[in-house]
Amino acid sequence: MTDKNLTVQNEKPLSRESLQSRERFLTPAVDIFETDNGLTLVADLPGMTNDDLNIDIDQGVLTLHGVPGRQAKGDSLFGEFSMPGYYRQFRLAEQLDAGSAEAELKNGVLTLHLPKAEAAKPKRIEIKTVH
Figure 1 (cartoon, rainbow, N blue to C red):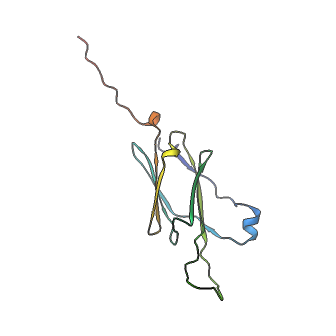
Figure 2: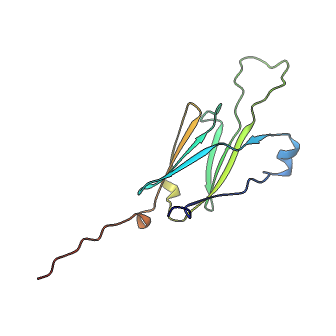
Figure 3: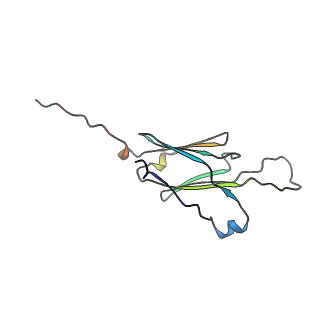
């Protein structure tokens, strides 16, 4: 289940409207680990909060999409810098149970646990001794 569990989708523009509105998206750095129980995805998303980030799984495609909210207090009078958003997609293997996924976001690091479906988990078959 190593290389067939998760494939990186080519980053493509979200839509013509998002390109025209000058939104910028960064591709977050991601590490993926596999265990007997599933996959763990760790993504660097500095500046993001739980309210800023959307994680969706639709038709076997995992999408990480977030736009950081304003962090400064008060009304903006002038601004030359805006924090870009994040966008990344992965195609998931059918052996993963997307309905049982769990996510944590702490200090700008997202940890997403994607467990394997029960049918995909390795099973040990006991051997009976017959005399």
